[in-house]
Image (cartoon, rainbow, N blue to C red; front, side, top):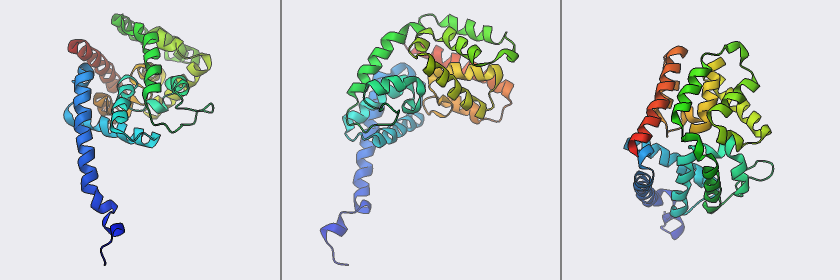
Length: 253
């Protein structure tokens, strides 16, 4: 075959250079996260952190983001809202205000992350009070498991969402509160978490994110839901895992 420019510059010949560029980006991303999000990232080993970075790169690329700087910025909402924040109903309002969703809830291609970071800043100011009394979380979950599973309906779930995360709950109007509770409850049921356990999943997802069960940011959660333990064991492990995570953040500060 005659060598031409067209058949020399192919995906195959470019692959080593592309792989090297991506590898360099992953190194920069890892250093960025280790520096800027030290407490939570310290709970991840290098392999786990690489999974977070690669998933974020995939999601950002699909969104339309191309430059290295913007990919690094995309990691910021990932660290606050979870790897699947774009699919998380509790953040749809902020995505819409940032111009990332249209009025029908469909994704819009973007080039810059700054508008979303501005909305993230507003969200943070409105919700930071939720973590000022960590003992309230332990008390609320203890109260939950003193209740009867017979009373678990939508209003019951909403009441515990508000009890555990009043500021986050207030950020969603009534319609979005109910929609979020229903959607998160469906995911919990798929994971065989029903009744009071389902309420626990919904409430934890308000902090860890809509799909925290398979988010590489939380390998401890993935291990629990993918494990072979029975539901009672998973319940204990999930509660302990969440507490250990929060203790780790405090210890890292």
